[in-house]
Length: 372
Image 1 (cartoon, rainbow, N blue to C red):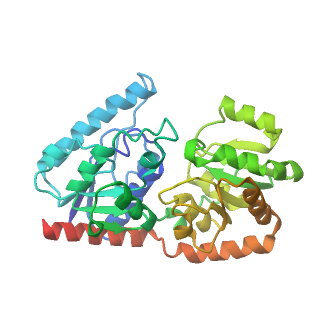
Image 2: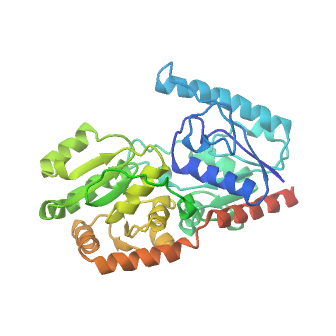
Image 3: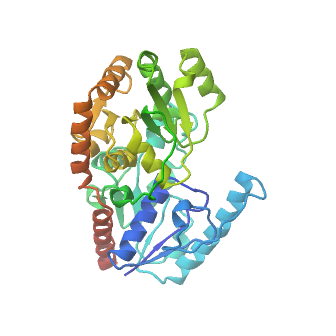
């Protein structure tokens, strides 16, 4: 069987959960399931493709500025993807995002789409930057897809609620993490505070970061040794720094760039706990990353989080400052609790291996090829 993937999630993204998902999927299909995978991509700075084990790509510099250069190479990659699709040299096509450029070239070949979350649709009225303008376009693709992969039961129910989709068309296949078998470079380390809580990724909108910081401010002030380390997504904005200053915790909150997986792995490994206060997520790969690194986890009690983590995490209502503070204090001050969460995290992680994700996805591919 030959599976073709397109450029969409790799053209302009150096990192990112969706690109990571597709890279891990292609890697495990190729090397563990012996599937012929092809990525229709020419130009990319994507970190996950640097080893060229999936696809040798050409890196580029931003000679026209970031946005214009990305746009130019995205158009080139799209043209290349269209050519690959038109040649019909594959059994099933799996677009890596929801742009529908491929429809005129696909012919009768089946395609599968992965739906990660409905965050734009759920939060478009609450946050102006999440406009959800492409809902009709998504509906068209969902209509024409042979199968839809939802990354959690929660996401499946959201799809059924927000879009017009037949339940039998959706297959739930969980994400996984390569950290489950990751080998950090021997001797590698980073400088961090001795005692810190870890926050990873985007800090805007539904991520609930500002509310979380305000909730734990009393603890940061009370415990002179405790810090909050925020990994990735760029340095703090002027507004964030102003908020930290007003709360008088500016010296207790640190930003850490994540240049590679070694840095991210070590951040989890050294943290006293990982906190994920989002109002909503489609799955939450950082939960699995924390499990794999032996890092205790505290989560919002909403969306997919209880489904993913089950009893291997502490939970709090994301809009309740007192409850957030109470649960984080428990995490910080109770070593026995942390040890118990770490053990449960390792056990829960066994249900989310990259091999399982690849095997179940391959079953979906085979089912749509058989019907084609």
